[in-house]
Length: 411
Image (cartoon, rainbow, N blue to C red; front, side, top):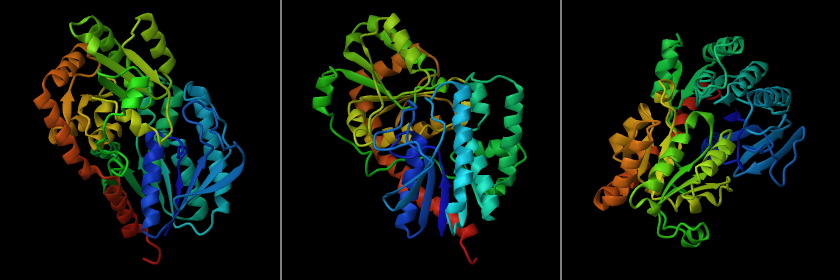
């Protein structure tokens, strides 16, 4: 089978959509299938093209057997709704125009979170008269509205109509959570064409590791209990809560033993750094995104992994991918997200929960982790033992099996 996968994020970018797409496609190639990924010049999240690439009409490369085609897009940083929308639209148009040059395709997949990529995939599938699969990683535009980027506007209602159109036209929908599947059912979408393939972890990379002592010394973290947030510093994550916790911890007895690190970039990074500076938080460290080959060194510094989203009904259906990476590394989780992902943490015994946007409760759980060694070690072992349930290789195979069952040529 020849699979054409449209995704506007792909390695060497290191965000969750890029990693999931690459790891799935890599496994499909290993199983003997041809995979072409159509993406753009790597530039996320700063809107700066990575070294070795150019933003031009067409460039190709091979990446672990995957044919990667990069098309021109309007490039901007991951901030500012209007400019990002132009970015998304330009990718959609370029992908559609480039698609006739990709021959003998059997299946077209488009992934979210933003659905202009899925719009492009639907159009390409119609041009090629091939099945269209919508990989649903986020409920868009609802999540953008919840984050406060757009209100109850004409654009929002138009986007809702496009969203429902894509759900109805998709031959198959792959949702990353059961909650998303339930949401689509409530929207009148046939649940029989929806399958759930959760996010997972590449266990060949994310596995228990000793602290990188040289890096800890370089960052002045030696001997400290390090709590970290690794990922996009976006509008949906309400990371001000973590800064409030750091501020309170600074004043608490024994609080000088704790450090908070933020690794990543995003729309809120500048504001978060300004707030940390205003509060004089010398126990907080901001680190820019690092190459994929380096990220495990930074994960190894963490004694606790903080996962957090705004306290809102919509995000109860979200399962952050960093949950599984934390488990793979054997790092106890401080989980500030309600709903489906919390049930995973509780079922696997991989961490402690706190109410989203409640800095006081975050501090209480952080202190408990640091002071109760027996509890800490139990959570660590639980995380390591449960991680194989979410192995990316197995999940990629599950997804491929779904495709072969329904779309394999000559069936």
